[in-house]
Image 1 (cartoon, rainbow, N blue to C red):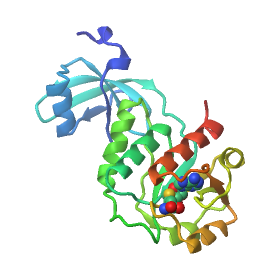
Image 2 (cartoon, rainbow, N blue to C red):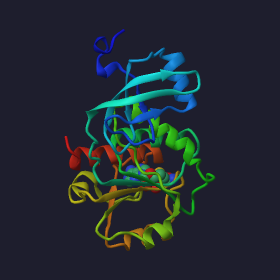
Image 3 (spheres, helix red, strand yellow):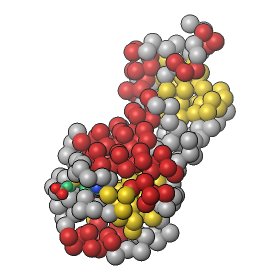
Length: 246
Ligand code: SAH
């Protein structure tokens, strides 16, 4: 198949960490080389789309194919770097499976940063950030995204509140009640953050500490208690519908 036979929308898309500019030469790592060469059977001259989270998406031509290392040359930018609304999702770590789902969906919906926050009732061990990053990369590759959320090391709730940047609205999903979310979110445009508790919820002392912050906007997600992963994704989707670009 020639380059022109294959529309850009069906060409493989891969995330790389190298810089992308006209003429850049990129060497894929071993798993990606295997995927492109052996699974997708791409050959020299074929076009692949690469993105790195910074330089937009680039149409790149396969320059050489070896079992362990496929190289490509960047031809032209095929999509500009997207603008992600300045929304953070601050959520307590959840057990494996649920947290994997949460990071994948947060990446698809578009958050600028996913900050894991440990609270008094957080019961899971330190999440494996490598695994979570891999889920975000896979979601971004599939969904045509050019940006990945930042994923810093987890922080404690105390630390998060102590260092809170006051200009950023802290939309606090309080399962014990708060303002209706649509009205509250309309007042909490970017820069903003959504805070979701662990499966066990926040302690009363934690809720008081969060509410004491001037930037806090306590909201209810409705009369039904949601699991933490559902609450996080519902809140991000509503915020994006109200404040994100169409
Ligand atoms: N175990 C708690 C529920 C925790 S739900 C209880 O029984 O009350 C986990 C997190 O999801 C909560 O800390 C909150 O941040 C969010 N959440 C779930 N349902 C919510 C709702 N109806 N309104 C606001 N936040 C909600």
